Length: 390
Image (cartoon, rainbow, N blue to C red; front, side):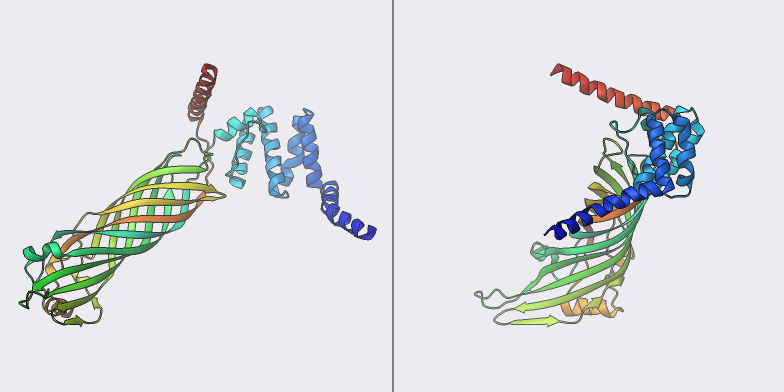
């Protein structure tokens, strides 16, 4: 039993023993510990000579490297060596761009210098996947039947489509984002229209109707702007709204149609799927509205957004509606009695995605930093006043 206890004690203590041995034998760790002692003892001038060489040679772990940068920058600030403090603050932000200062652990001078630099992402790239629910809006109705008599019998149905997009983003300022999306979008919609009534006995509802399902695939390019509602750059949950314009290049459009004749018996006319790309405009455009939410994770964000695409133009190509030299048009007209309507295709969508952030540290200037500090002081004063009034 004692042997088992000795073995367990050895296994549990060996990592700690290893850290102690490493700290006593690694010159960089030894110098970092000495620099920390020098800082606490007020011997600020000794710090650069202890940690600078190891920092430049990247001989520290991430945790120790952060500690070394903070000691070095603080030492330069206290010595009035502002240019050197700026140089190493830029290096520190490139190494750890998402570092967040703390009033409890960081000195005010370090916090102020850190705040003087742009610490929000400048660029981002990512991907997003989405589901869409189309909204078919008929502008003008056409057909080989009595439209006025049967227009009320036309039923339109939309099916869930999907999208896959890659995007790039640019932040012109902390709370703004310009985005450019490129992706593949799929729509599906269907129509059922009653065509004719027949002179069967009155006890039989004799009529004819057709149904069709159309699948549209397009390559879309979107350009827009989002405004981020965040209290500060440290916000982990950020709501946003956005607007944009989306252009679509039609890749394919296929239709599956059937015609039914209902009387004392039922007969069905059905053929193969037809390519009807010629009946649709090659280029289309939508105006887009977006609301969403970003959640901060290391190096990037995950997000979800809801939106609505409003189709700006008629999707149908009126020049090809009665082009009888086209075999697909002939079959649709004479076999199914189908004629393409003029319509818009709007879209409700839900998307989830991920973006990776790129930071470019840059000093935002003394005036900007002073304004930022003044705003923070006002907020603090309001909080203190509200607490005192309570």
